[in-house]
Structure formats: structure tokens, C-alpha cells
Amino acid sequence: MKKGTDEITGIILAGGKSTRMGNDKALTLYKGEPMISYSIKLLQPFCNRILISTTNSRHKEFGFETIEDLYPDTGPMGGLFSCMAQSRTQANICLPCDVPEMRPEIIERLFGVYDGTSCIIPLTPKAEPLIAIYPRETTPVMLKLIQSGKYKMTSIFENFPVTYVDMHMFNSNHKSAFANINKPDDLLIK
Image (cartoon, rainbow, N blue to C red; front, side):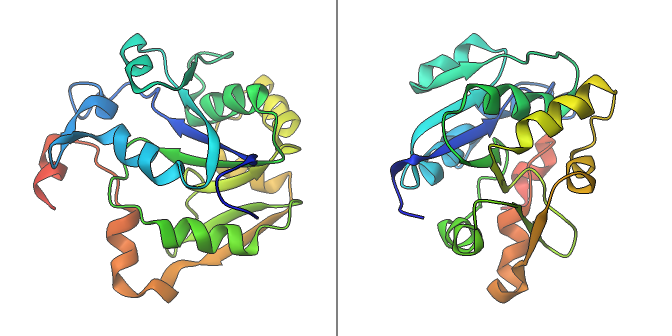
């Protein structure tokens, strides 16, 4: 998969309620920058089009398309589905807005095993479905799950081929890359 092409759409999940943080996580400053800017900068070398799943009009300030959920209150799956419904590419790389320590070599590793036919999901050792590659064909699978009231992201893997990628090859530092910032205290860890 070539980097920075029209073959890949980047999807940033920034539509959560941020109840534990107390304010919009995407706009919360981390090392002086809004957290969402880390996900944007990470995706830009890999894809020319980035979609932000959000209902917050302030996210438009980052200069990318914002997509509201077609099915509100369906969690991350609803946000991912709504963005993928707008995607025109086979490959769709998903990142949440709250993983500012995520590294490009991890994204490169995921694309290194992407074959265009299965979801590429990192293992840390647990499955990380919000930092993953989804082929276009998962869109109707997600729609069926949403319509049946199944919003758990791992439900996708029961209905679509998956390739899991062990992240331990990146040594113990991989844990910080996958750490998400959910509450104010998490900002103090780094």
C-alpha cells in the first residue's frame, strides 16, 4: 500500500461524549496541542482524505470533513460506519482522537499485512478495534449490526475476516502508543 495516496481514507473517531474528561477530548490540550491534532498528523502521510466523526462544529477548524453519525448513540461503531459510508476507498484506517502517543511505525506495520480482504486489528495483547484498518466491505456488516442493536466493535470480527497483528514486536513501548487519554489524570502520566 503506497503512502499518501487516494487509496486510503483516514477516519478519526472524535464523537464521544467525553464524560470522564469533563470536556471534549479531541480539543483537550496534550503537550500544548489539541489531542485530535496528533491523530491528524499521524494519518496525513498515509492518506490524502481524512474524515472526522463528530457532532462538534469546532472540529471543522482542523480543515477536514466532519461526519455526524447516521445512527446516533451507537458508539464508535456508529461513527466508523458513518464515515465509511462516505469513504470512496477500499482501505480505511481508523484512529480515535485520544491516542496522542500512537506512532507511525505501528500504522506502517498494519499496512504491511493489509491484503484488502480482511480487517487488520492490532493485539496488545487485547484486540484494539479503534486503531485498525477496515476494508470497504465491512460497511454493510456494520449496518446490519447497528440495525440489530449490536454496537460492540468486536462484533464485526464475528462476521468478517480478521487478521490480528501482534504488537509485542515493538517492545514495551507499544503500551504507551495504545494508551488512550480518558480523564484529566491521564494527562499527567506522560
